[in-house]
Length: 250
Image 1 (spheres, rainbow, N blue to C red):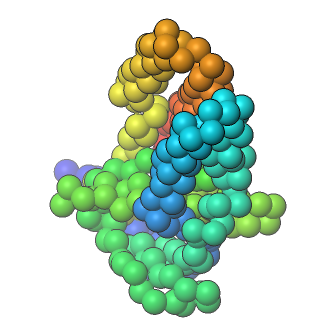
Image 2 (cartoon, rainbow, N blue to C red):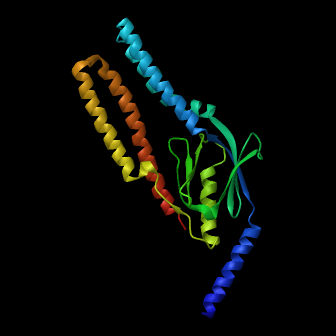
């Protein structure tokens, strides 16, 4: 019992000294306004497809389908990086010993958005994605805080590296319940089921469309393959990232 009390006492002093010596890490990155971005992309695709169908119906020129497929299905994929920059804003993350402080603005000290106490965080997950990392924090009040980061370039701060070091140090020194990592949706079984469901649905749609509108089949194949391949790459990246994250746990 004496040795246990001594170890606990030393551990308490170690945590206090570590908090005193540790300097707050401050990182500023571009954070994507995800709701506005997704609203724009979905509106662009849906309205574009409807416009293409209307023009083909009016002029009976099936070759317009190819142009519509390129403009409204492939362009959002090719121009993803450019579009994301248009919907991103500078955001500062300050890593203090007990909380994560997020502020937005063009300078390092913008308007305060929120302060998240680490004792209120149950778990987290993150993923590099295809060029645009994101971080999700699961809170004890059953809510979550999500941050989608814009593309990283050479020399730009790596927010996820900062988070990994931050949470690893917190788990080792806080004396509180460890904040655990959970798999992202695309790395889970539900993500795999989604891919299977979408693939089967796409094949069934191709069969139905080819029975009546054979000329529309190439457009459906190109658009479907582009979306499925993107989801497949997202799942492979998420699985690889999750395994790497598990190996880096203390």
